[in-house]
Length: 469
Image (cartoon, rainbow, N blue to C red; front, side, top):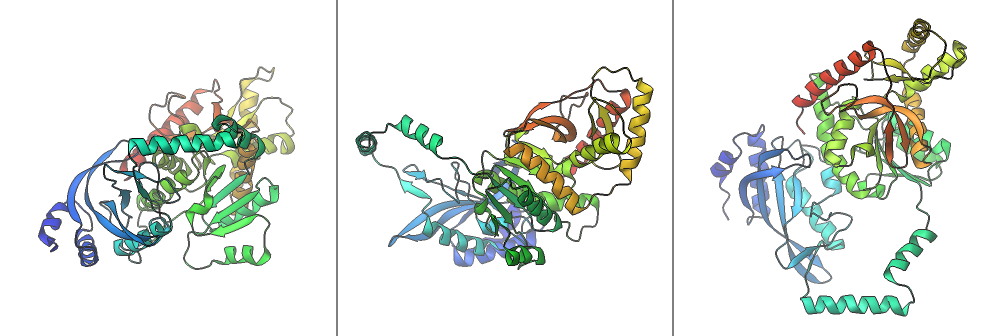
């Protein structure tokens, strides 16, 4: 089929990089001329909608000596070619999806090529070639049997289980009872922070297996040294599927690029997360997602939206490090005798503020304020280095993996607390365990704390509205 260049150009009227996209689609047409192009409404995971160019067709896949034409659909984002396409299987009425490493139950396709997408190195033709190669290993669709055949297959499977002396329910219960789920942790990103988190988690001995996902090109010095010195239980991989069945996935990746503004820098991170988060969520559907990437409040929100995980299962590292330091300063530096708990809450940076628990004590409010101000002044001179953040991350991971039900000040969905109406993440004291957040600890705070929280929520929400998810 001849490529209708002008027709596609009209369809791409609102695309930022129309000429680059057309040139790439011309190349696709050279290898796969049967694809059909249209503009339809795509519904994102957060229920937002956008009219996007998409094309459908089949790709030839050789499997066990036979060639199968696998129907697929590509959605091209309006920031293409700097963002990867969204890919789905498009099964016909007599086909069923075979859920596996590279395909979820809705037919969405996950591949290393998508996850490592980087223009101009990456292109749709290369993506299709990898898709064919992966589907040759694991066919993503199968033909549905007739109802009689299906019933016969179910009956044979049931008889097989009876002859083994184990019913379906009992076999599942036996497997769960006998097999202990390993404590697998994944750290995403091999920069200084990723290496620091990996070493800190390894030092605590809380992971049976620790996967470091290296998103960089080539071999970086840090990952090379981990290989050289053979840190126990640590696997370095560039394949996101290596993270499968993790209990905690820690995001440390930051992609600032050659950003001209703060908004551009944040958008670069959002674009990177758009490829990472859905895939990692697919591989570890029961994990707690722990975000250390910056700015942590916004990236935690982005992770929550892209993953469609429940809000209690997505947290940012927030002010955990500051809170631990503040508690140490009050207890061991200022030698204050108190049973009250104190945390740093709000937004990371200058707008953070201390908050005390509501325990009744004889000490006057003025004395608490004076103690808090003195401790915060000492805290402000403490910088945050990669290794110190890594220790804080390991502290949070330990609480989750061991289900310690410990209170940490972490970034959580703050909507509904302290008069905050918008969907924003702020650091608040929370009870943290195996399923993430089980409770947010609230306090009867003085007006200045509430004002700070509401001010931070307003500014964060304003920036979020300018981002393209």
